[in-house]
Amino acid sequence: PSEAVPAFEHVTEVAPDNAEAWYALGRLRRAIGDLDGALQALARAADLAPERTDIYEVLGGTQAELGHYSDAAASYQLVARRRAEDPGIQARLGRARLAAHDAAGAVAAGRQAYVVCPLIGESEKLEVASAEETFERLAGDELKGLRLGLLHGRLTATEKEATMDSFRAGE
Image 1 (cartoon, rainbow, N blue to C red):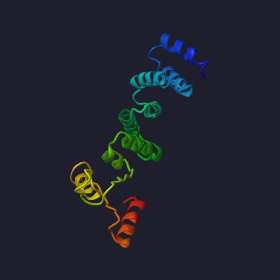
Image 2: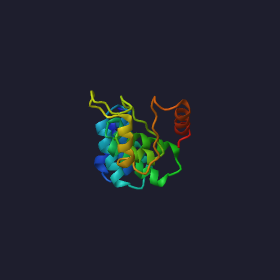
Image 3: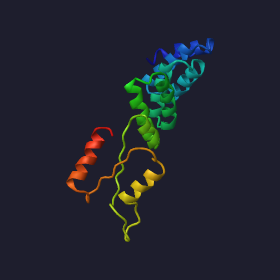
Image 4: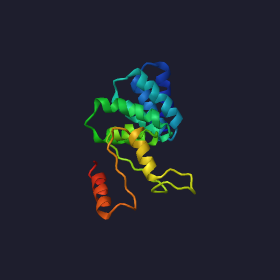
């Protein structure tokens, strides 16, 4: 692939509006590990051909590899709008949103999440959020309207099992 890069760079110089050449250059640069170069080429291809979901899908993957999770989620969202039944793109969108700390968006994309807290209830000795406090805050604010469950060691075995069954079932 690295031998082909100069040829595609030449094509993009001669025909700067050739989306296919920019896309091929981006894929080649990504294949040889030049993620920054790939990002630039793929972004240009996406600008030239906004209807091409294949470009946005590779662009999103490159953005995610670079740690640009919010950008990756935006790219995957464009693909998901046109390919709503594609479970692969929905999974990538959900992972990008989780990585971008957009839990509500990730859950809306069909992903699940859990939060681990060091305490069940309040502590006078430690200044950390408890599971109960965190659950109440998330339910009333950031994740309001989403289905949430609370699991901790003070629940009965039946309550714990019911919560875990719901989580496993995607509820």
